[in-house]
Amino acid sequence: MARWHEVAEALRGAITAGIYQPGAKIPKEDELQEEFDTSRTTIRRAVAQLTAEGLLTPVRRGGTKVREQPERQSLALDTAVYRDELGYYFSKTVQHLRALQPPTVTQEPCPPDVLALLGLQAGDHVIIRDRVMGNSETGRVEQLATSYLPADLAAGTVLAQADTGPGGIYDRMENELGWGLLEWEGIITARPATAEEGDLLSLAPGVPVLCVTRSTIATAGAAEGRVVEVNVTRRDASRFEVRYPISRA
Amino acid sequence: MARWHEVAEALRGAITAGIYQPGAKIPKEDELQEEFDTSRTTIRRAVAQLTAEGLLTPVRRGGTKVREQPERQSLALDTAVYRDELGYYFSKTVQHLRALQPPTVTQEPCPPDVLALLGLQAGDHVIIRDRVMGNSETGRVEQLATSYLPADLAAGTVLAQADTGPGGIYDRMENELGWGLLEWEGIITARPATAEEGDLLSLAPGVPVLCVTRSTIATAGAAEGRVVEVNVTRRDASRFEVRYPISRA
DNA sequence: CAGTGGTCTAGACCACAAC
DNA sequence: TTGTGGTCTAGACCACTGA
Image 1: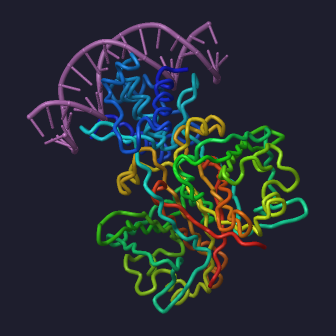
Image 2 (image 1 turned 180 degrees about the vertical axis):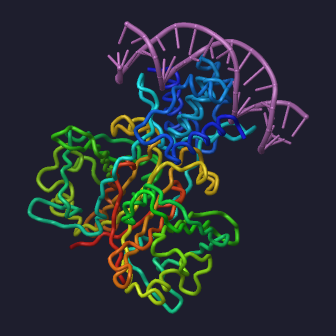
């Protein structure tokens, strides 16, 4: 077994055994170096591993702390979609999330991971609507939301404009565009965060993002039967969870 | 910006731009060292970052490859529980998963992350039933399943034995123990994989685990109103997703 | 403002698996 | 067999930030 692996295991054991409590500092690198009689690089490799596992967070000038796991915030699973005079919404729980800035709208080749969902070919273009959402009072960023719309359907329409008017894009699709009563399907996934996501969401190193991907299907008009939108929301996986009820069938 | 950050960004750009295709090899470390005119350590730091993001997988003696994202396997969300003469099951989709070994049963202090779910105090003991599940034909490990039961309820009962008989623990709870018709609730989370999970599930470095946590609530008998079991299943987040329907309310 | 973690260098040897 | 990534050393300087 590699030396850094041994060091990591020793530290991990000390943490789970409670010798180092959450919020407490572990010895500084020089001290660990002496304790384990190895080079600083090896110590750093071990600490990096535990950091990636979410156990430690190094603080500049403040030592390396045992990470306090934040309480996870529950999201109700949006198995039903509601509608009132203002538009569609997917959760009965009041969302305090607001777009912190106007959405970014661009047109680009479709990223590979949404190609299949939209039923497109490699190289096909999509309209990308990007929003950074959070608590408008504290300014804290809570989720990143991105919509992908096939360019052959959406380019040049109101769907490609930053302001889509009252009710948002779904109202436009059902009313002005005549795409019928929309249908939806959801997928929950998780993956490592990109560097950009880590920045925007203030993720601790190594923490993944929890993704909820919602596909919108048209039932009439020019887009009948097609997936006309894929919406991906990404959240800090250490701070959010998706909760759902189970009933007897 | 740190040098390794620049290198990482350059490589990331080349990958997303398709200059390095999935499955292809990026230049070996010496060549990158020359190309970017920096030390090997810096190159390795950059490659480590992209590996953690799931973009690269180094292969010994075979160079470093651009990771081919495996197609995700869909899991139906178990919003309903079914029952037949053999016992309970949570998914209509036939599961080919079998326990690859008999379950491990131990008694330990309750881990902090399930304390609140079980309504226990720090230091309280739980019975832990651990199973490694996978495809019994290929031997491939697909998921890790762990059940936590409060020791004050389960110790000394059939629930603490490796073989719980036909129908499993839920039948024992409802029938022999008289805990009434059980109820359930589910939670979906994601977190970085531990070293052990990475080994068992053959996870690529940096890939998180997708967790489905199911709590069982008793409605009668000595355990009435209590959470009598917490079941946590962990899967490779790059290979699984949870899919669910959305209907109009 | 000084001590901590962050970055970087130059070099060496090792172990594993693809060739 | 041997070239690749994996590990490790000893040392240096930097930059941020919390004491």
